[in-house]
Image (cartoon, rainbow, N blue to C red; front, side, top):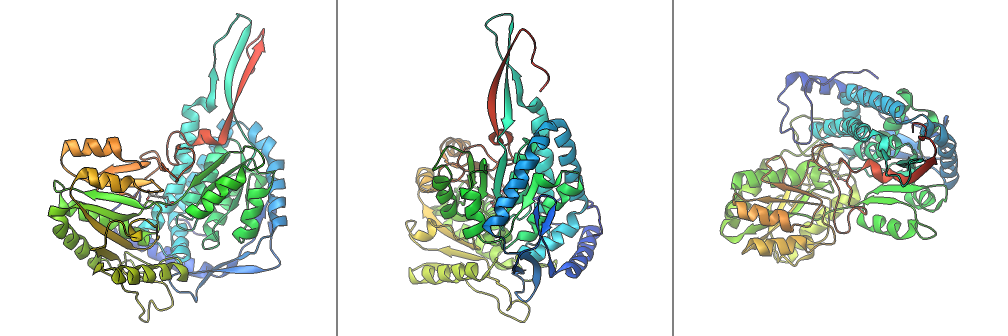
Length: 531
Ligand code: UN1
């Protein structure tokens, strides 16, 4: 695959890329990606590239007649073999030492950055992201490898001298890897949310078995391949594709898995939380959905608020667990705010994202599109007004894909279920409130508590919001995204209340520790040898 280096760093906060060089390079990468479509890929089990008895097709949400890739329908036995390979690789990977591991991970990060365009273009076909979102996802993966490596280094490999009760006693605390981690990753950040959690585990010295989403297996495969290219030994990163009922279930039940990291739906995450530790305690990290609120006060700059909400409600079609899907706006400015938001929603160009003019592409599959049309029908039935959107595109270019339009709904009671249930589609409800206290009460009345935002230029309101809001990632007056767009080392990302089990978030300074366990080492009469 050809490589090309981007001229500017793309993150989720990049508002536009009026950079012809970048656009032309991306267009060329899209053409190269077209030539790669439809190939068959193997699972990665130790040094073996394993084909299955049957394959499934990974089809593009842009046009369901496009087969992006073909992957094996893995079995429980494939997972057992992958766990076996990961166990075998573990002692040498741990013994390699963190400095050497970091060298390999940083090398992999540079390879990923170099190939940002090619990977971004393939991702565009696989999950329908626009180019900035796709480039952001690839670059985030590379930055996750770099940031977690930096944190490991800053902590000096998590070896800390302890006190001593006598001169002959030498004690230190050492954090050690658990062994083999399962990584179950979602479709919506197909590289960053396979690569990021895997990187946390690997940098800590564990080995992994990745099960990518069946809607996006290619990006997980590419991640594992890049590690191998960078020199990470084969059995350290294994990949098994196939359904949750067999491949996912084996990862959950197999006693050879020492820890599990999951990103995905609330239902599956909560089931794993309960099931994974049934026999004995094992660490599990879950990052589930969010019904993320933003609050718009009369003191806000309404233009800034509408822009921030628009970007977080409709960026990648609302298919981010960080997406903004409910707004509480102070009554006196509600009409003006809704009009601005609706206007911005109507200006969004929806369509095939390989065309650079389109900012919103498709949702991931037919099930997702049905969620959207059902929500629109429900809002209308229950007296809501569709202020923008509410339609599905079905012209020559879009009929074979899944293209909802960005939808703003007002007029529903704030107790309606559309203020409560996460939909993962471009659909936002706006409710009116009389005070910040009322907005905060409603914002906090959720099973989730992942991200939240406020628009206000009143210091007292900002302070009250920061003191009271129950969410893991919060933003004040952020035009580039009211609730979305966290970046490694800039924000951390994980939830309070039902979303994220440990309260230590991805992208942040306390992530790698979660893949380690503590050992206290006391050696009499001499210093312990270097760890
Ligand atoms: C997710 O959707 O599972 O902050 C998390 C953001 C992204 C969120 C990714 N980093 O918008």
